[in-house]
Length: 92
Image 1 (tube, helix red, strand yellow):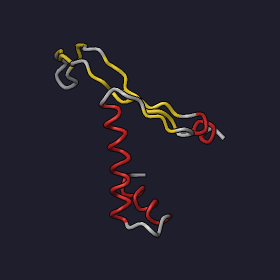
Image 2 (image 1 turned 90 degrees about the vertical axis):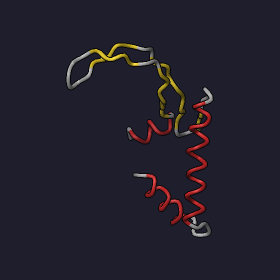
Image 3 (image 1 turned 60 degrees about the horizontal axis):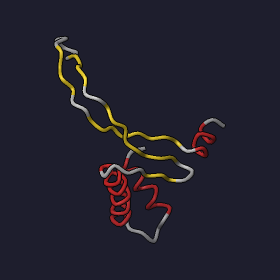
């Protein structure tokens, strides 16, 4: 499912909302998650899972085309841990 399909599904299940309103809601939801992660926080959605960030150290990588060493800076990457209910539904 892509973002536009999600918006259409929510709009079809909530006929009192216009598609534009649903788009704003979905945007606000995802923006809130990203803002919280950027601030170093964690977002937990009970029954779904938790979003957090993990730190990656700087390292020396390789250019796959030429094989020459390339410096890769330290960075934060998003991490998702599924909740118990999600794991159970996926494995039933």
